[in-house]
Image (spheres, helix red, strand yellow):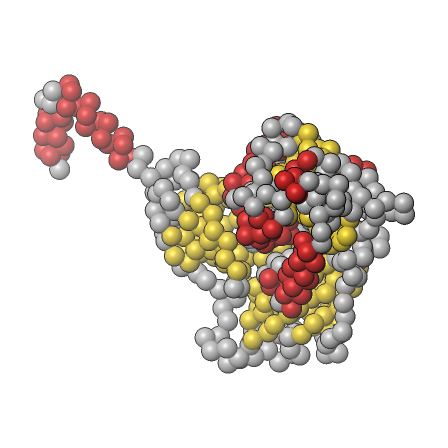
Length: 447
């Protein structure tokens, strides 16, 4: 052994300087070679105030082009993975100003955090993820229902009563249980939680969801009378307690009646800058004689994202009919420079071909003050339909995504019916045909 080392030293020393340098560079390059997480199924756990919030994802690819897909029941959300260093990954949450940042450990685990990227709001949730694990809270039996829990089934529609010091709107939960697997959604007057996935065991239930914005954890118990008692944690933000009971006919307040024009108003007037700083108003020639859809959104808002996922392709298919749209973004920083980044990313991701304007800071009271005529901006998103005369004809609060089933189908059906009716109305005589109709589609304001 000593002889071998001696020979190795002499051999290295006898190398030409250029060859020795090349050898050292090769060794350094080899030492810094990227280490990629394994492809396939992963299970992570966030630490939320001492509670474990599980999430599932899949990795496909190694190196550039690697995709991380978050799994929530039937829902899939895909994100690109980059490697800032040879043993770390950075996953931007698409249009949300947040990211998963993690380091690959020697044992193959990922250890990191979900981090807000909003300036001066840099809070985070730590997590650990393990490869090759696909269950949610605990292993479900291989055959659905093989060891079904003994307590009452959670399948059905639930009236959810929020337990807070201040009055809070109640919610509706749509749950489906199969053995000890559980999935569903909690609906509120402002939208829904997106699809949640989890398990039931021994009178306890667990649900979680992570689709890009802050993750959600729901857990609680069901007693012998069938009553629920639990809590909903919104990851980075807050936790609320609730009770619930099955009620097939429970409904939320009518979303078409929550926000409305105050007495004396028939129109909505505003002027906001587009992403180039140019002022845009409903009184601009572009919108005269057109049916206009006004969306009040925020790129931080998951229900706004889902609504845009519906509206952007709808608009591309229908713009030739004489309809225009405007999205007004209220963002987490009151800065047009910041909005150029967030709304610009939003525009590109969803291929938005209507105007995006910056409304200001994400605050419902401020939005109400700036959108004069509204009684109150109850939620992001809010959808406002304006007829060819410039009169407000409908205001819809929130958004119900596809996971809500019949609620989503009813929304889409009514949306199309209302737009068909508005587009069938004649163009006012005061508006010239060339202004009101442009089959090729008007150019954008440069947003």
